Length: 210
Length: 250
Ligand SMILES: Nc1ncnc2c1ncn2[C@@H]1O[C@H](COP(=O)(O)OP(=O)(O)OP(=O)(O)O)[C@@H](O)[C@H]1O
Ligand SMILES: [Mg+2]
Image (cartoon, rainbow over all chains, first blue to last red; front, side):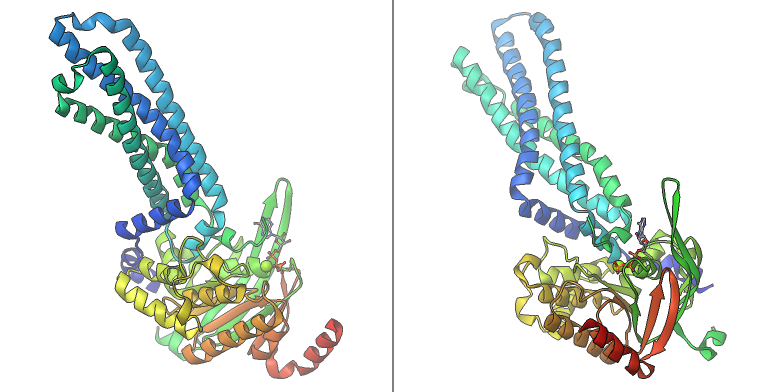
C-alpha cells in the first residue's frame, strides 16, 4: 500500500544534523550555567588528579633517568596510585550519570515536545551525548591544565631544574591522554541517561499535571 | 487510489478506538470505542468534562500513543502500521501540535522554536529561518523573534507555539485546550487566529476545549463523555445549546 511505498523516502526525511545538535546542546548547557558548572567540577577534579599523577610520574622518571636511579623504585606506591585514580574516575563518571539523570527528569516535557515535533529517539540521545561530550571536554581540559600545573609546582620544590630538563612533548602527550580519558568517561557516563531520555514517550508532553 | 478519490476524503478517522490504562491490578478504560470522522479543512471542537478522555483521544490521533484496540486513519493511512521513522515523519510533517502549556523549548528563542521542526524535516537553516520569520509575523510576533519563552506573555508564547505548529505545512493541527491557560481576551484572540489560519491555509483543526468561545468558530462539535462520543453537532444546530450553557455559566 501507499504506506510501504513511502517508507524508503520517509526515513531519510527526518534528521538532526550534527551542527544543529551541537548548537542545541551548547545552548542547553549555557542556560543552566551554574548547574553545568557543578557537574563539570566533578570531571575537573577527577581529571586534575589523573593529570597530576601522570605528569608527576613522567617528571619523576625524567629525574630518575638523569640521576641513574633504578626506575622500578616506586612500584608499591604506583599500585596505590592506580587504585586512587580508578576510584576518582569512577566517582567522576557516576557524578556525570547522576547529574544527567536529574537533567532528563527535569526536562521530560521538553523531550516529549521534541518528539511531538518529529524527533526520533536517537535525536534525543544525540543531544544528551553532545552535552556530555562538551562538558567532559571542557572539564577535562581545565582539569588537565590544573593537574599538570600542580605536578610541575610540586616537582619544582625538589628539583629547581625541572623546566629545563623536562620533555615537553611527553608532557603534552600525557595531558592529551588525560583530556581524552575525561571526554570518554563523560560520554560513557551519559549513555544510560541519554537512552532513557530517548525512550521517553511523546505523550508525556501532552500531560499537564506533574 | 481511484476509489479514495471518489469517496469523501477524511483527514482523520477513528474506528472503534479503545484505550485501557493498567495501574497495578486495576484497569481503567479511558476510551470505550470512539468513532469519529473529520473532513479535510474542518474546524472541530471536542468538548467534554474533565477526565472524559479528550487528551487520550488526541494522543491516539496524533500518533503519540497507540490505542488498545481499534484503528486510527490519518489521510486514509492506518497509523498503527507505521514504524518509528514513519511515526516521527507523521508528527513532523503531517500534524502540528498545540498544547495547553505551550511547551516551547525554554532554551530557544521564538525563532529557534519555530525553526526546529523544519530542521528535523531536512530544511536548510537559512530557509527554515526565513519561513519561521514569515510564520511569526503571520501570528503577530514579527517584532519578538529573538525573545526566549520566559520573556513572553502566555498569549505570546501560545502564538509562537501556533507558528511552530504550522512550520511544515501540516494537514492537521491538534490543539489540546489551547486557551486553557489564557485569560478571556487573549483566549479569544488565539481562537480567532486559529480560525483565520484554518480558513486561509485550509488546514484541519481539531481542538479539545472547555472554552465555550471555541464553539462559535467550530464547524462541528464532538461531545465526549466517559470515553464515548455523546453527540456530534454542527454549529447551526447548536444555538439553543449555547444559550443554555452560557446561562449555566453566568
Ligand atoms: N498515562 C495514563 N495512565 C493512567 N491513566 C491515564 C493516563 N492518561 C489518562 N489517564 C486516565 O484516563 C482518563 C481520561 O484522561 P484524559 O486526560 O484523556 O481526560 P481529559 O478529557 O483530557 O481531561 P481534562 O479535561 O482534565 O484534560 C482519566 O481518568 C485519566 O486519569
Ligand atoms: Mg486533557
